[in-house]
Image (cartoon, rainbow, N blue to C red; front, side):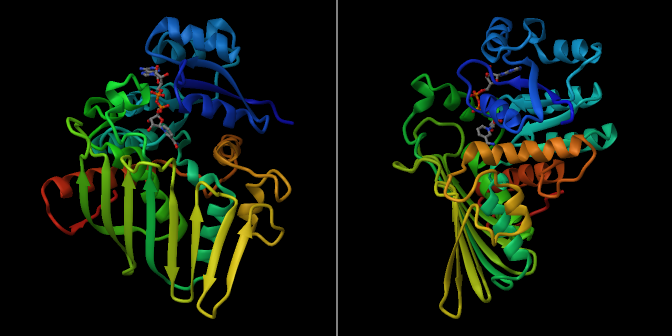
Length: 376
Ligand SMILES: NC(=O)c1ccc[n+]([C@@H]2O[C@H](COP(=O)([O-])OP(=O)(O)OC[C@H]3O[C@@H](n4cnc5c(N)ncnc54)[C@H](O)[C@@H]3O)[C@@H](O)[C@H]2O)c1
């Protein structure tokens, strides 16, 4: 087995959500080890996180700059950073890391604003180092299968995409109830101009383009702020048009009481359709115009190469969110070792995601109706 790749985590301090998920996912296959981090903007909390993660205390740094300087001077430096802070820190963490020669894995959205995303794209190109974006849902075996089936023409030309992402956890003023995850998500100085649309709408947008292989070229957006006093959107409806004419409906909402993490995509083609739901990720339904329904399951021997490669266990042993996330890290390891990983999302998708947020926020605010979507 090749030596483990060394990861430096940015964010992921005590009580945080996604940083610890990155750590678990990265380490699942034994190809990557967390060895360093700037886990918090508070030096004491960064040190505490280092203790919790069990790394060398000298490698739990007070901030990103200190980590990059110290790691670059080591004989065994980190191979890459993983950025898991609130959105407003993504650009500076990524550009500093790239400038110091490190590859970057970043959580979505790529940055806080579209302008920042374009700056990031230029920085990635100039540095010539790998940059990967963790659109988690692209890691599920049956999402990769759905993509492959559409590509192979199993449902014919795509006519309609319905992608929905309802959650209920922000149905009340959670930001005033000491919910750490809520506080920054509803603050435009930390989240950027999009609330719900930047937090989960962008996942739905990416999933629609990932599964269909089509690019959105027009949209009509209606974003609402339902909870009184909130400064960003918490309820999103967007109509989509894809190149070639297919239509789409995207709904993302964080005020949908009773919903947990209800990401679901349905794609209707000329001869069939498919349906995948994140909360039951090990089934993918296909329906055909001649009256047949086929339910595919993770681990089925008849699945395509991409889905089989993304599956760790025999069928019937449920795989979920962590394994999907770990598939992204397996792709990252492949790329860092010089291979290719076509499903891995990068700065191109990062810019498209930020363009989606930016275009929809503006179009809704200005009530512009249908607007052109330029994802460059
Ligand atoms: N891929 C996904 O499905 C997914 C899920 C959740 C969150 N996210 C994204 O991950 C990011 C973090 O979200 P979260 O819910 O984990 O947030 P969180 O508030 O739970 O954690 C953020 C962490 O970053 C740390 N931090 C803040 N500023 C820092 C700095 N300057 N340097 C170092 N650390 C700093 C905080 O101390 C905290 O530990 C966001 O960009 C979010 O959009 C992605």
